[in-house]
Amino acid sequence: MKRIIIVIFVMLSAYSMAIAQEATYNNYTGDWIDDASWQDGSSPGYSVNGVNLDISGYITINDDFDFNNGLITIHDTVIVYGNFTLLNNGDLTLDAAGILIIFGDYLSYNQVQISTGGTFVVTGEFGMLGSDTQGSFDNSGSVYIFDDDPDIKTGDGYDDLQCPDPNDYPDNCGYGNVEDIEDNPINDFFEDIQTCDYDTQEPVISGCPADINQGTDVAGCNAAVTWTEPTAYDNCDGAMTYTTRSHAPGATFNAGTTTVT
Image (cartoon, rainbow, N blue to C red; front, side, top):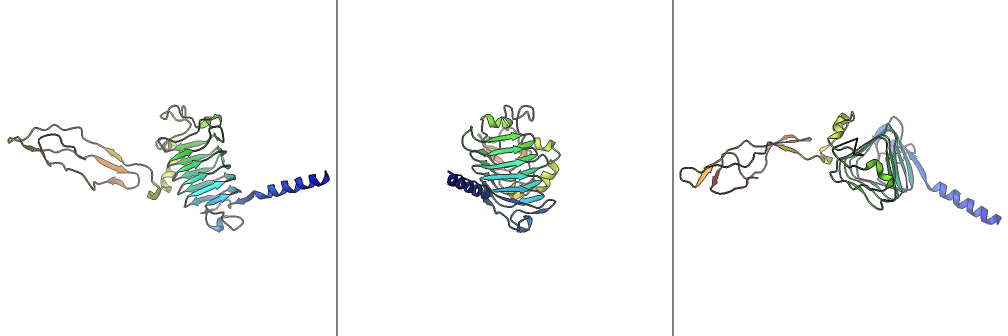
């Protein structure tokens, strides 16, 4: 019996040592992949397994990132210019002062525990895969999901993200959208760090004319038709000009119905 107890003790000790701990420097601005950002002098890379990560400072991830079997704790700011994936048992805690902004897609799998007290923004697609009964998403902060049709689990652990009325945030929807973030003081910072490489907002087109009924000329064969062209504005490119169109104002049309694109 004494030998069995010794063997069990050794196994438990080995398991506790298997979860490594890595941390970034506090009050520091740097790139995730830069070894100088990490207290042990070595970046964990973009694909991390079996490590607990403690993130302070302002850290930028300039690539796709995936995390498995561990806990990421964000105390300050992490900006991701790429996709962000939490694989099985890849947990995330976002402190009250923490900011996580993903200019890309977010994806999580089974047994992922998420707790957000700060600001969590996803500009790309938002997907939760696996069983509704596994994992959880506890939110006491601000979550903004720009995906018009996010895939969100509906189990008991996901009550904080349910959204009966997408137009009624925060009273009747657990997350805001691209318009709601404009009311958050973080919006100025958010707009400053956007890059067009990861822009997910579609241009806004306005002023499209209604159908036009125009009589033909005296000969009864055709007629010249004019209209005011619509305008287009993009958050990255500003006012946009047309590169292709089927007809310009003042074009001559034959009798009948013509679609202008």
